[in-house]
Length: 583
Ligand code: ASP
Image (tube, rainbow, N blue to C red; front, side):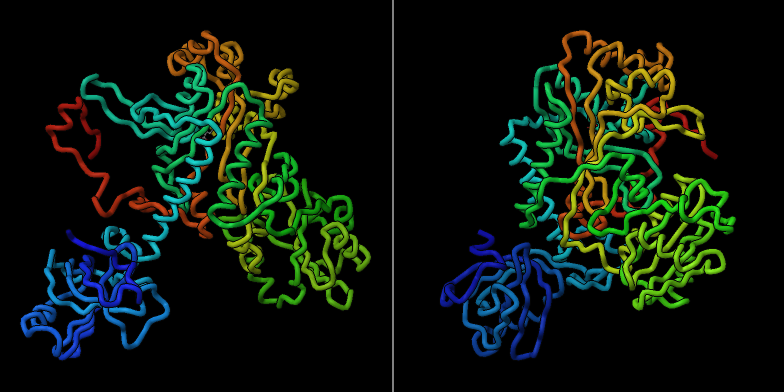
């Protein structure tokens, strides 16, 4: 038996017991006549003591050879500790070692295995297995497990069945590039890894499974903007014979269940906001509603006052920043420079201070009287002490720039509190989105999403106006889930493909299987998928998903620990009938 107890288990009730422990050497303090060792495993740390007076000379000598991260097994007696440590569960005792074995020696680790480590990100990723020994990483993996268990409990209790779907499939259009896998047995042909199990879950509905879920890996070959992973995990769900309302209720229930079980937080009914409203009020389809600073459109009151910077623009829009009237010139300049950076790309920022004494002062005093500025304050909801910030330009662009500024200020002022949770549904997304580059419409969600029946006539006349039965669940400014009611008949589905620019043959070649299935009694159905990594990170009060993934990839999509991707040797390439076309 390697151990009778874990390293996190013993306390004063065990004093006098003989125990066996196994673990890693975290720390050694050698005073010559006495040696203390902190022994660590997943469950905690137990202090071991070797004492000249009570231990043999051999034992003392052997103990002196121990190094950090050695794996050892010790047998000894639990005794009361002289200087107790109230900060750890085992802090009242220590184990007086009577014998021990070195199960495995260790090289000196390349960074300290402590909560606060001296290892940089790259080094920790290369030795991720050592990083995982550290509490901050280990605890996040345990946390992820708990979230996963709660998801399974809730959905299983609601009658959902977890069904696995294949990884070696044909392309699924979720808007990214596919990762592909050459087939040895089918020369010159490739599988694609699923961007999501979308078509399979719909086929499970045709198969009569009624309620499906899966915690599943998805693969998308996209440029890795900050905090994206080429492989990530979804909680993927689908239901038959449902309307949007029932899906929203079930998954609002899931989110509420998680917030309660994991965070001990109770939230009211989730507010709902249409896509149009979200864009108008927050410039963003995933607004963080933990704080206000809602957009106010100022066209009527700010245009035609002689300030031609505003006059020529499609939209003049502002926000009130609480308590920021006291910002110095320097602080305001920093904000102006922030929005002018190429990442944001704004031309500038107009400001007006609503001073505590009720007076108003702006960067455009030449054109606007105090009375005018009072109107700005009224529209933006500014109170004495607030700072009004205004941007102008092409409507969509300006909204998204002001949205970025709003989030930046939310962070800066500390309004985005990680222990506060503000979920909401964003509904009525547009069905289609115009793509400037390819000059055609793309499905905003995916091509299987059904249009709102009343909007179908618009498909022929004004496709951009057609709304979809699509919804996103947003939490603290992050899209954590998205889904839709699907098309479930062949005619509508092939019409949709043709609107998206597929020829009949292309549609048949890529999605013939789905349209065929729709001819054999497909039930009305719909579903949703949650980003499991992101959801876990947010519930864990963090914004980065990487720490919640055991073996994440870096920004270049590399696993630096196993050094992947890597080259294939000639033999393998030949077997796969592949020839590389690189210099
Ligand atoms: N497959 C979709 C996605 O990955 C989710 C859904 O429509 O259920 O975003």
